[in-house]
Length: 196
Ligand code: ADP
Image 1 (cartoon, rainbow, N blue to C red):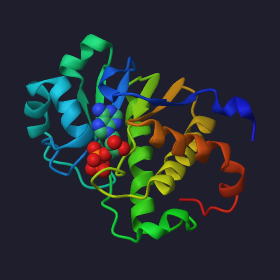
Image 2 (cartoon, rainbow, N blue to C red):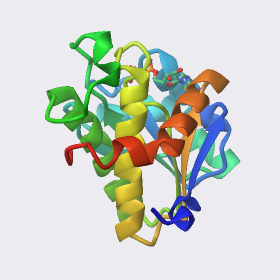
Image 3 (spheres, helix red, strand yellow):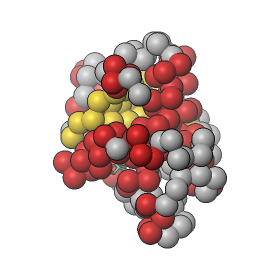
Image 4 (cartoon, rainbow, N blue to C red):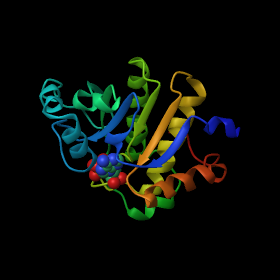
């Protein structure tokens, strides 16, 4: 793998509502009407107009994404909030280290990244930040989710030039370490992985 391919991908520890990027992704629930975790933080920071707007969207099925204006978050330079609904993990936490594949949750999580990247590009974004979708209350094993997120984003950036910066915004240094490790060891797992 060419190391320059990683130039557009970043791992940071931060609050996603504080980033200066064109679009941030929200790990929402199917109602799109707010919840806890990153969803709650984004709703608080974007203000009540986000909830009003989302009431007009009619929800969003798992694995898909919709887009909203950034409302009060425009003050930090964010233009769009992409709302995606990650899968609830129903499997065993031991699956953390098993091969990625056709597990329904794997496919749904990959779809969240795909749909969000498509929307970001369609709305002219040059930078986008993702939280670790589904790895909070939805219980997706963290390493497994990081591998899916990274491999999907890498695949996208290889084929699309518009996004100059894709940020994995972790909420703890421990989570950021998981992403960095997935990226550093990609040679050992990406070749074995089935395409998802
Ligand atoms: P899900 O329901 O998809 O699991 P959560 O919000 O519970 O969503 O968790 C997803 C991830 O977002 C977790 O890693 C959590 O630590 C992280 N997170 C929570 N608040 C923020 C925030 N303000 N900025 C970035 N990440 C956050």
